Length: 259
Image (cartoon, rainbow, N blue to C red; front, side, top):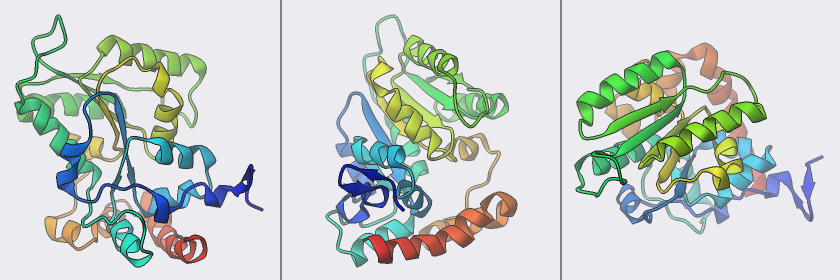
């Protein structure tokens, strides 16, 4: 039996047909300035949102939701959802847009700084070191701050406090959180009010590895054909087979049954 919340079951907590989803990559420029939480939605996260009430709430109550999967775009057309996304907007597209904008715009830095600060929260020290190295070359006008949280299923209160202290001390002009879904979205949502920051925050998972170069992104033709999932499956079969081979079938079942 599905868990209930008042009169709603968990599987009714997130409805793709009712979700407000970004419709075009160009609409990234319409996300207001200031403290805004930007999440992504794909077939995997949709499946998870039907099982996890807190994750569903995090997606529903974020400030922007971008369609990080061709299946989301196609499905929204099929079920005539209130949003009508015209193209996939991957987490990488969000990352590239925000980083390029901050790197090139003439914006007055926070008092006491000479350059904008970008914070990366998540992943290993090895990956973060590569991110710092690559950012210095690709985005030379930005300063990068990183924090690697402990690798564990759930964070303790002490872990979360240390992470929040690091965030608030950095007071970044842009922040990326990469701890895999749904962990990253849930943690960020639960601690949102404790972050004394003024910037966009994107939960972007695999983008950390893409930018670090530890995981290769699919060729453009596969991205444009909606086959990036297949490329990731070929690259990391032991890690991704359940997510894609079973998850894609589960996604179709869930759309038919719950939308």
